[in-house]
Every structure is written in structure tokens, then in C-alpha cells.
Amino acid sequence: MNKIVTAEQAAATIEDGQTVAASGVIGWIVPDKTLQALGQRFRDSGSPRGLTFYFPCGTGDAVGIKGMDHVAQEGLMKRIVSGSYINPVDPTTGQRPALMQLIQQNKVEAYSWPIGASMQWLREVARKSPGYISRVGLGTYVDPDLGGGKFTAICEQDLIKKIRLDGEELLYYPTWNIDVAIIRATSADEFGNLSFEEEPLLSSGMALALAAKACGGRVIAQVKRLVKRGERAATAVRFPGIFVDQLVVDEEMLMGSDVSSDPAYLQPAEQFTRLPDIPFGPDKVIARRAACEVRRQELSIFGFGAAADIPLVMVEQGTITPDNAYDDYWFTTEHGSYGGIVMNGWQFSANRHPDALIDGLMQFDVIDGGLCRFAALAFAEYDAAGHVNVSKFGRANPGAGGFTDIAANARRLVFTGTFTTAGLQVSYHDGQMQIEQEGKVCKFVHQAQSITYRVSEGVARQQSALIITERAVLDLMAFPPAHILQPLPLMDPALFIP
Image (cartoon, rainbow, N blue to C red; front, side, top):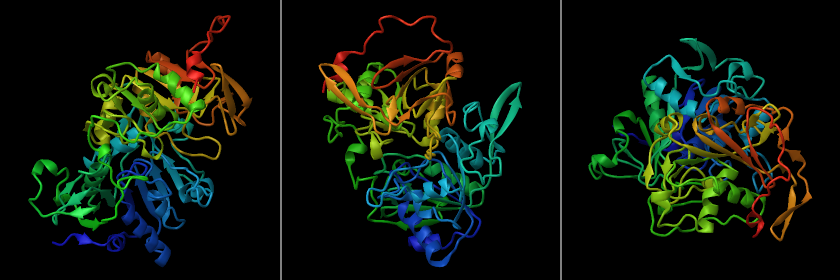
């Protein structure tokens, strides 16, 4: 059976009203050519219509690797469920991604689940379970009492329910069918056996494929090249071709955002290469202070945003070197890359110079099992009731990504971010910071627009938590302090020296 088809031929097999799931983490492991062909088919013919899309993670960078933005078209996309949404401004047009515009204009049923749920739910679909059950997310934006993960007003169906089991309240995500899974690997033979030898992440692809097959659906795999059957050892094949229906070959496939090919994302190294510089300013001050909380030989997980600067600053300071990076500092993200240096920006989620890699579902077993002892995460709002928000604020609807699972299960938490944003200007002199202009938006608010983490629940779980900003470090407690220290201890002046 010939499984090799063009992207256009693969897209032509998708029918009205189907549920289509696709892999990808920002620009990594995105089957972009196939998603592009599906979007182009709709523009050309008006078909297929009324699709439900399932993306366990935010897929694509909406600029160079558009990912989910290819299919963000009114009429094509009826509903979307995703673990996160990408929201950059296109530098050439000044526009937000097409998908974010659909969400803001209330033109698509948009739901957002924690990535832990969007990953683990696939396992339940694959084994034909009635649904996924979790404690994670109770009392947050995915709790049915607080919106149930609905991000647009036209969402009517409740995709998350609250149940009671043995006297305990839990969140229940009922399963539903996946008709088509679009995944990506590096190479395949003519039978469809898949290898991921040039992918710095495994993510959800294999789980998506098995979920679709269990539902009687089809699997489309996009690869960079074909190899002869038997050319690779069985140990090099990660996914059997018996579960692959169609193969799309894209010889020009990029490794990731702004990365055509780079072996540094695939293996350890004796020297660190091409790490990005972090310009001196508030973000760097925050990363320097947060780095003081990182301990040797403790599995540390870093989230998207300001927190991802911390390992890079530790390298710049000489705290982490190629000699001690693997034995003393154990770094990961929610996407399963271990060792080496966590990257920031559009390269986030794939570590540079890693020494191990596991898939997305297994990584959330690690996270939900509490094996990541320390976590550094960004924050968008913190309110008077002790609620942290990263999931929905202003006109931004990014979702929580891995934040909810990480924050619920790490022993020590650090939330990083500037005190204000949108126009903050500061200067530095003699180890001190001067605020020249406050940002228009204060992140410390009376009531958060969305709840992604509750400090009171964390304290009950015996977690410790700090908020680290460019001007203060706050120890989060479940009660007001009895008195304020006078004089207040000052942050180390060395933090403010370029």
C-alpha cells in the first residue's frame, strides 16, 4: 500500500464536521505544511466546514511557522480546544494572530485546558475510557464553577464537569472522538515507521495518533525524508507504521522557529554554543534574583516567559558551566527535554544541549507526581485574595500552558515578573534602581481577571512561594504579616549592576 501523498491530497481527505488534532509546541514538531494545505483548501473551495480542532499545546509561532493559525478561519474552525494560545504581534503587519482575533471577536468556540489535562486526556481516549479525572485545576479557571475553561461567550457545551469520588471533589474531562491526527516526525520508511532523530521534542504526537486510531480515525504523519525499510534499527523507530495511514514529505521542514537545523538541541556538549544574550534591564535583574533560589541537584522546571531567562543568566554569571551543568543542575520544562540549558523566547521548551528526552504524557506524570521540586513561573496578575493569574487578562487569552500542573505540584515556587508593565522605564546607578516611568498596568490588583493558582491552596499543601519583581521580593503566605520589618531589608546591590 502506497502511503505517500502530497499535503494537498492529505488535506482533501478531511470531511465536514470532523475533529482534527495536531501536534506541536510553539515552532517545534509542527506539521506545518499539512496544516497550511488544509487552510488553503478551505480558502480555495470553502470546504471542509465546521471542524473541531484539538491542539494539546499552542502550535506554531503564528509568524514563520503558523501552525494553528493556518486553520484559524471562520467557517473552517467551529471549535478549538488547546492547552495554550500564541499571541505575538506580527512584526511586518502589526496584527495579532488570526486565531487570537477569532477568539477576541467571539467567532469561534474556544476552550483552554491545562496542558497536563490536554496531554493525559489523550491516554483516556486511546484506551476508550469515559474520561480523565484530576485534582489539578480545582478552584481555577477550568473549574466549572469558574468558567470551565471557556474562553469565548459562544461556548455552550460544558467540556469539564465537577464530580465527587469517595467524598473528594475532582474535575472530570469526558472523552470524545478524534477523527484525524496530524503529527510530525523526522523520517519514515514506505510503511510509515516513524523516527524522531532530528526533533528536540516528542510532545504529544504518538498519543494523538493512538487516540485517533482507537476512535476508528486516521493518522497523517509529516516527515522530512524517506528511508528504506530496514535501514534503521528497530530501537531507532519510535512509532510503528501500522498506525500511520498517510505520509506527507516536506524536505524543507524547519526544525523550529528561526532554526532550520541545529544538533545542539539534540545532544549534550562539552561547550555551550550560541546562547542568547539577555540585555540588562528589569527582566535580567529578576532572573538574577530568582537564580538565587535554584539549588544544586534538585529537579527544577521553568515556565514560558520571564522564568526561562534564569538558566541563561546562571550561565552568564558562571554559576553553570559545561563541567557542572549535568551533574549539579537538573533543568527541564513541561515538554520533556532534560539537561542542558532551558531556552527563552520562541526557542522555549526545547533545551539546548540536552541529555535526555521523554514524551509529553510521561513528562506530566513527572510533574503531577511532584518530582519537580522547584518551579519558576511567570505571572500576569496577583490579587488581594492571593490568586495568581496567567491564563486570561485584558484582551490576551493565552491559557495556562503547563502552569497549572506545575504550580499545583512543585514543592517550592517562584513567580517572576515586573511590578508594572506597558511602559515601565527604569535606570540604574551605583547598585540602585530608579523608576523613571511606571508602567500603565499594575500587576498587583484587587481582583484577578482569571484564577490560575491559589496561594491558600498551596500553603495547605505545604508549598512555599515567592514573587520576585525588579523592585521587591514577596513571600506569599496565607495570612497577613503581624508586623512589617523596619527598616525593610534591601535587595543585593549587585543585582542592579550591569
